[in-house]
Amino acid sequence: MDTTEHAQIAYDAFAPVYDDFNAQNDYEFWFSVLLPKLEGYGLRQGKLLDVACGTGRSFPPMLRRGWEIMACDISAGMIARAKAKFPDADIAYDVADMKKLPTYGEFELVWALNDPVNYLVGDGDLQSALEALGANLAADGLLVFDCNTLMLFRASFEPETGLRRDSRWRWEGRGATGGVYEAEVSGEGIATHVHRERHYTVPEVQRTMLNAGLQPVAALGQREDDGLVLTEAWDEGRDHKIVHVARRS
Image (tube, rainbow, N blue to C red; front, side):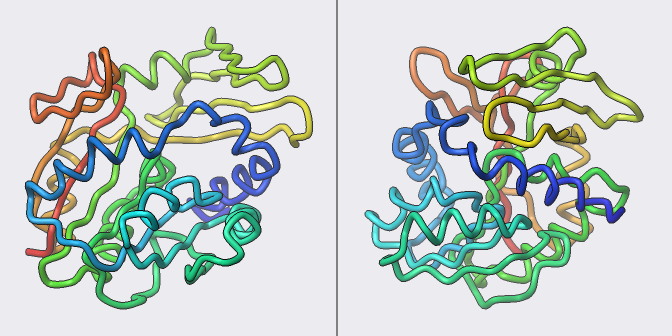
């Protein structure tokens, strides 16, 4: 099996219930905090390449702000859902693995949100993906992606973890082997499947950025604490995610 084929299998299985399973995610609220941060790092409006776009839950806030969107995902099932949800939107789509991403053009913003980078479990996969993502950046564009922290992995992927957001589905942690965490998802209307994710430290990510021809701009700790907090004083034991920002070297 290719080192990212497991992600394609998982999200093809997840696609029929993905929106309901993640119904609590408020992208407008998230972006109302994230985008001003990115503007502080020089983001200017233009074209967005949304990598690992899923069912397109991130599209409406960006369309409302006037962004032109190109979207791709490793899962054809997720892309089909996105197309069905936004039949009249002027969005270009592709099915693509981020570590083998084509060069679609030059984008002011390239992002991969909601931990897709953690699904890059093979040695060398992260650098391959960052090189491919960076090749799609405009000269002054920004690359943005988030990684799960140790705190989140311990809360969601340990063997005793049995998370139920809804009585219809269960997320069951299996723990880690060789630095790769696993969790099984099962329930109504969904084929039982396994998610495999690798933890990447901030220094590891930033070293890989440099090797991929990218310049680290920021690492932001993200957590919910009486609202959404994004801070450059990140903490793996406190924050849920680290949001990485980079530009071409």
